[in-house]
Length: 332
Image (cartoon, rainbow, N blue to C red):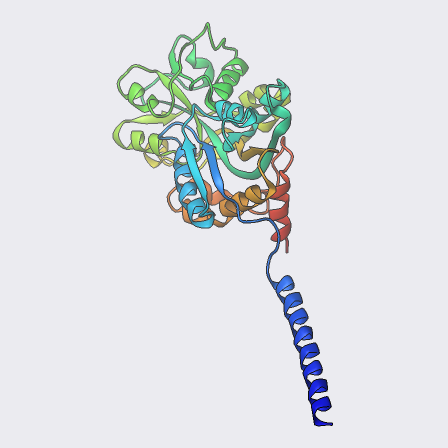
């Protein structure tokens, strides 16, 4: 009798143990994420000129990504700006980049290589168009640039795109009516300071360090871009719909503005990748961009303007599936 009872007890113990294993397994399945493995490998992030906002933002984002994605190696690649950035990502020469929406829309309109593969991740901060002159200059509006020597950005930059469009809207031929200098923000300030330029165009977040540094050592002024000019700019249609009227606050460049707000044009920036990038990688990258906003914003002011409520609006690009996953995960 006793051996039989012992066998029954052992069977009950085994059944109880098996049931416990099943319960623990179900609990672990519920609690632990069993989705995609952690992202790994190497990513190339195309930024901008060395002293521009894209590059400064990219350098700080690289540090945040290194912490959040320890198995991913991030390589920063300087560029001429938005137009070159878009071309690199679309053709597989870079994995992520920042670009202005007007440059993206132009690339899509022209059906350039890889355009159909482009995807958006985050609407970032706005760029403000800045037309900078020496304080004593007789240039008071864009039309006054006729006959002047003007830095208009490098050929692959977003600056070149909007500078040419603004001059055209003001009735100028960007080739025949000005002496155009293909310089970037890394060299524009010194050229103006040295008397080799009458003016330069810049498109960037506020404040742009290179412009702020110039205003601290050299007397400059920001030329207003009035509403009438902006209406003429927008009248061209197509990708010009991404331009809108804006105001540079009086404290953006205190020395240059002397307490005056300056009317101008703004255009949004977006974080861009392609459908080649995995959903897991894009979700993780997007999460880091949003989560690091305040930390990066302490050094790159424009980053503070990244807003989760508007980040999803990456028009003219559809959202990448990985970005959609991130936004769903944080939806209240």
